[in-house]
Length: 521
Image (cartoon, rainbow, N blue to C red; front, side, top):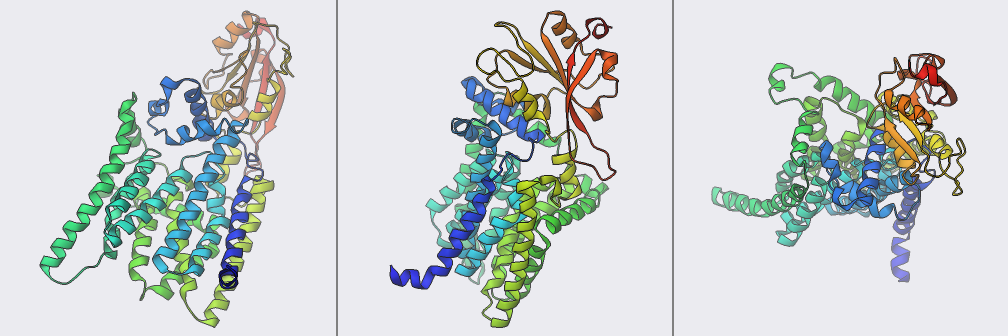
């Protein structure tokens, strides 16, 4: 043991530091307000937890349910539903961290590379940001890395048990998100690691052998995916997928649109959130290792770049989280610079890595304590901090409607059997799902979506007020263009979002329906 500690103390200390850095993700985990898709996923998990017959509820919107299934038992551990959902992503990210570390060692047989990859993954703002959100992408990334690992082992060692494990990992990815199709299509790239011999007969027999190892992976993965046929609306997955991608014919009619702008946007995300120090080490990884490790670099490059290029060409919408599952392979290439046994290079690389880590920690410190100060790309800042998708004020409003257990509410005291009715803009998304998520165990509070047209007070709120219920409306100021008093509304409170580049600032408004005569006009 002493000998082991003496020779490996640096790696052990580094591993402990990586774990500490990684688990900083749990600090202030809910400081960022709930995002639109987070509200939807967590609300689905709550409904599925309450009603066993609805365990396939996400299929109604063409989404796979594995993330919600995992969130259900975690909700028993934490009272805050947002924390529970985000905790699932943190643990998924940890699975990716372990996978990145193991895959780095597997490909390059270097403890230094494995430790460097773990460090970069732990501190990179890109992974740090998305591992703290209750979205399916961290779980997809985890299953992707382990699909690569087990498929690599199956191909290089010609073992069926590893092929089966790869199939289970691929199945998990397919039960998480349709983007798992990329993993299935990229598995044959790993054939380059097989022992190829010259001669037509040898090549043919080797190809048959590799097909025999790959087919079980695809069959098991697709078989797990078909479990979803047990639920209703399975066909919605294929239909909803068409809402996000252009047909193949677009390659012939508009090959550079949206390819060029989306590739440029992806470069911006990686440059700002990589951060750009990762770009430097990524390029150096090719420069230093292309001769000896060309197979490893080629495979990792395909798994990193192919999904980004294909999505840029065919996706109707592309956001940073859609390329999260590609980032681990970029990180491993970047970490491979530490294979080079040269004192001069080691010193230079140490400076580059130190700069990368320092830049990342400064970025992450903002995310932990004041997300509005974080240097997020414009597209991400607007969605998570500025627009209607950012759930500023939802938690505070929900708290004001929670019972104290004695029939009292901070905003409205209601008697037994009476209702508090809260209308919200929209029918799906940040509102009303965000409020319903926090008010899940408040039977006297009813949250309903009332649409986006507020030329007059929505009829459900008129009816509620006339029935004697305490009635409220929650809406974003940017979507409410009337004077509240003209609709018989009184503003109780407002919760500002982040400031936009033009200096404007949206806010979430909580208004009470107060004037019977005017509300019925």
